[in-house]
Image 1 (cartoon, helix red, strand yellow):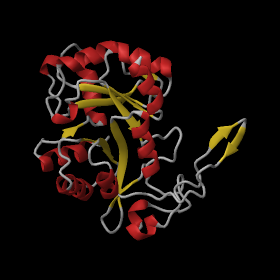
Image 2 (cartoon, rainbow, N blue to C red):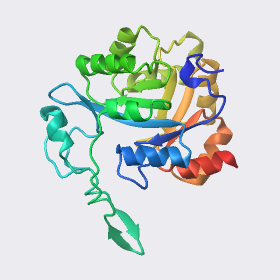
Image 3 (cartoon, one colour):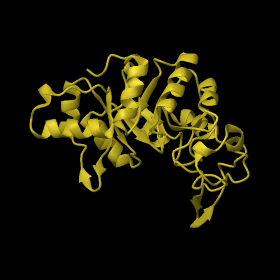
Length: 268
């Protein structure tokens, strides 16, 4: 058994569309999320940052440079400035050995979290808080309440103080994933065979298979997490063989750039 919170009560292995359908479409765009759903995603995974006028927008990086035609830090821009940027111009695919940019003139923009909630309100979300500031936690919690999404979101942050503050704000009612520190503590207690004395406030471990070349995700870790009613969601898994192996190990969900591939594997 895993967490009793409503987010987890699907009775199936969850297909997390990483930044939407990031393997085929520009990440964090409405198009990417629409295509992820069409491909079979159960959960829409996204990262949020706060603009200088306190609007939550979808962006992984601290700066705009990698994915848009803009430059500079997200937190130093207004939501109006963000809205003017082209977020499809740098996304490339390989076709017949050539690099192409199929979305450079598609008019794709950086959406706000409110826009995404409004369009996809019937779906579940995995929301990663990328700024380690109290005000972003407060803005996120208010928006979740405004859209009545408390049962449909799982909130994550790699920073313990950030996710701990969010848990305090939400009174523990909203599902959360473990921070880096909490994952490390879980692995430490597991290594000394003392997990009976370990308490984790998080509902899920969201971890890669390997961290700096060292394997951290194992079948025994999944089994021990389940004994503590903790779900395990590995990221970012894009190969079919890895998906099959992890499903056999008993993971509760997989975060992938290719939700179509994972959907096919799950259906098999």
